[in-house]
Image (cartoon, rainbow, N blue to C red):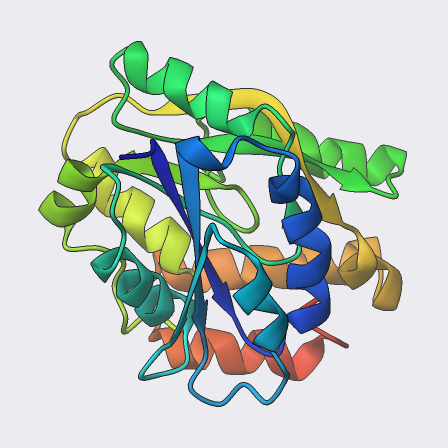
Length: 234
């Protein structure tokens, strides 16, 4: 058995997946598997995945990251899960980083990230991902956890069509178990900020977070967020 199952929810992400898999092509295939959990409504061609021995592809029954990640976990063969967005680029050593965290006794954690291309303002945003603070673990931070933790938590809450990562962490904190923040950063595209503006994206991020804290229904949060951003999925 290999070490970690890397689960990636996708929606028309063929180009991003092709680029992402270039990283995995250079890693030892014996220590991981990649599970692509594609949306029920995806329309792009994923046939190239058949060339990748370490990849499993499934068509999820519904659309939504939480639902798709849960579907991917159902077929995972390993006892460690890592959940990764298709447009996030982990470091070459991220599997080693996860192994070290698990060996240190952490059953759940996430990675910091940096933007590319970046700016001073985006560096400020990224700095919040380096610690286990109030905004930690959301957005494009790679989550990792043991299968035991995933099962104990009941996976991600599929009713959350947005903010599913924050909702998971909110529940996890109640367990009192420690959280590991790995400071070897992943790379996140800054395209969303370029298509809009740093101020607009941050104001909408803050609004979404406050709505989440106030218990507003996820679909309402999603409608506000997607209505006001250009290309919100990038």
